[in-house]
Image (tube, rainbow, N blue to C red):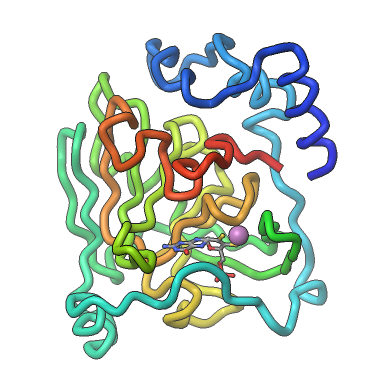
Amino acid sequence: MKRRLFIASSLSALGLAGCGQVKESLTEGPFHNVLYSAENLNQAVLGTHGLAREYSERDVDAQFRVNGFDTPSDATYARLARGGFRDYRLAVDGLVERPQKLSLAELRAAGARSQITRHDCVEGWSAIGKWNGPQLATVLAMAQPKQTARYCVFHCFDVDQSGQPYYESLDLHQAAHPQTVLALDLNDKPLDLDHGAPVRLKIPTQLGYKSAKWVSRIEVVADLKPFFGGSGGYWEDQGYEWYAGI
Ligand SMILES: Nc1nc2c(c(=O)[nH]1)N[C@H]1C(S)=C(S)[C@@H](COP(=O)(O)O)O[C@H]1N2
Ligand SMILES: [Mo]
């Protein structure tokens, strides 16, 4: 994290920082690595395709802290939770050929990438946990993103005190990373409500706030500007980096 901050600050010293402009510059296909911006340069320096360290079972922390907004209080979420999420369907739609509405059984059938990784929160705590669930790439592939697709936006069930929804986004490179998963289990048990049940994003190559909990919908889009504050995530809209590589 220190190294990342160091690189980030050297980039700003060079006058390259600022993640606001980045989204416009990613005009090439999703699988092109364009170095038009500090954000992409940052990604290139640190490596989008490197793997986050994976730990062993004995490194798993007994307690995994809960952080962020309160567990969603809205009626839909409460009803789904009461039913053990049997009626939950993850929508995958937007710029896709085949919109999906996936049950938990279908998500489990999409394969599982187990990984024991460290979660780093910007607030200065970390925890090692074992996450299990299908790779995001597999689930996106089921929906078949169109040529114009650039990003996926994660819509969540929770809102802040003023009613603003939490949301996050990744570009399709980050989405295709082998350790980017839709986690269904933490430490061999289905996610509990506080850790984002029934489905959360887990992306161990980036800071904790990218790992959206309580995901209701994944929307595949060409541009992040139309969403909320336009910076690609709840915390990004308050000035945090969109690319939060560790
Ligand atoms: N929907 C949603 N996802 C979220 C948050 C949140 O408030 N709402 N907080 C983020 C932050 S800042 C962190 S550190 C992690 C915390 O995950 P945990 O509660 O499982 O430890 O979730 C992230 N994902
Ligand atoms: Mo966090």
